[in-house]
Length: 307
Image 1 (tube, rainbow, N blue to C red):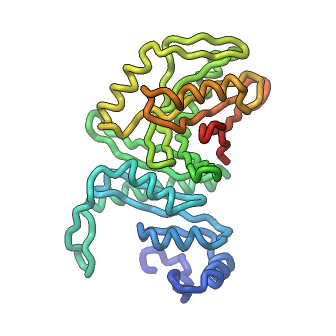
Image 2 (cartoon, helix red, strand yellow):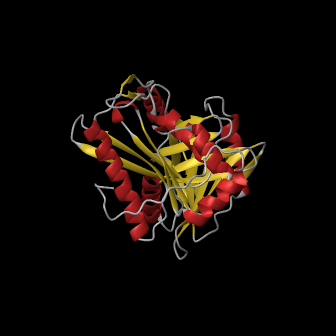
Image 3 (spheres, rainbow, N blue to C red):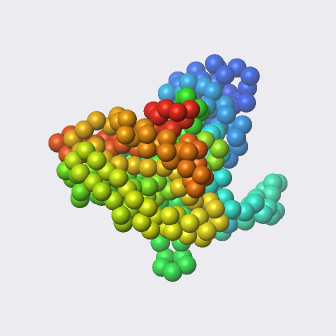
């Protein structure tokens, strides 16, 4: 209170781990507009997933040595957390005795934590002030070559058919829009690369083919150097990042897949040189219609749509 004297604090005596989820739901919806969960406890996110809370939730986490900061929002907080931390975490936390605290804590410099946290809060606040949608994001500082802070925001999609999910980088979407705009009115496309954990995907980047045929209603990519580039990415990331699927445009057309698209995904799923049996497909429309997209996964001989 002495740090922020203009803030009024109103305590709520409802325990989050109480057995009455309806009570928790009612108290939160009546008194709370935004929840910031800093517990990094899956029990907390599990309870928050269970209640029908009308406000916004931001679940924060920082990895060991403050190498990354994560803000997870929207639905499926527990599921999102598991996938994202599997992706970014490459070492178990090392615990040390905390100063002035009865509990051990992970290794991290206060200045590093403060920088990441304040950057994350700035992103959320700016989105609110501009009426933009807040998405889950990862902040990673990098001081190896040139000091910088990488920020990746991810749109989140789910497929009820096979309980699959996709985190799609907004930077990837910008790259796709730039490429298909350049090739309009012809179709154009490429390859998704990223991380896969069970049936959950994080699309981190795209590869552009150097050999292809395209026209107003056709796009055929040829191997060219793509296979070599994919092998190299797989090698330098120790197998973490690999091929996830395909994307291409339908100029002035619908985002629904054609029979040609379905047959192409069948061939990819059967290809023994590709280590993914349920590849992704994104179809993008552009031109006289606004930029739009639909995401699909090839599962059980059909293309299943993400929402």
